[in-house]
Image (cartoon, rainbow, N blue to C red; front, side):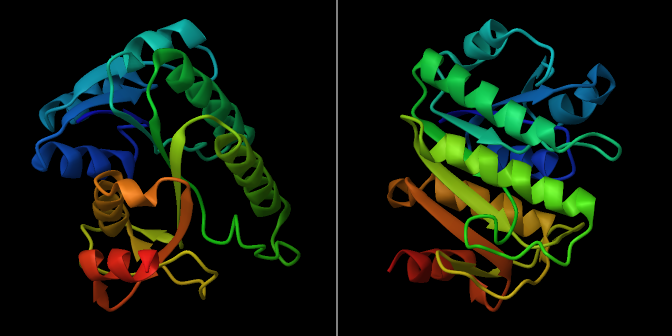
Length: 216
């Protein structure tokens, strides 16, 4: 598949790029900072500089033409408003629809779709979940074959290959970014995951077994 990874140079995005390329997919990484281009090119991805907030929508549409799937792995940086997550989602969903791309996978946050209470969170996290939930509402209301992955607290590392994946609410636990990348690949390659939201944390099952259990 030809897959567009939005936010391909981020800490999670770069691992998704690596996994997709290693699995034989043709990857296009979009990045905001041209100084990060060498990192994605080194990993085998065609790389295009696009700003989620400022680049014309037509540029995103042109980039997505002929693609089989889009992965939204971008996120607001420290000091930025989480509104960028909502705005970026809306713009890339529109671009995918305009380009005729049907498959769209978004990386969100655990509990965003399951009613996780934000009452005890600080204002920054409350806004973060508000934006993630607004983004999800836009995705699920689109014409795309969407999948949303809601991982727990992200930790750096290549992953263990052992996870817990569920369509129902699960306890909040952390999960390595490497496992998020590996699960992203598995979800993209399984058509039955379209139209579903998955919670993800570290666990005891292999990714294949966890996915099979989550779909059953």
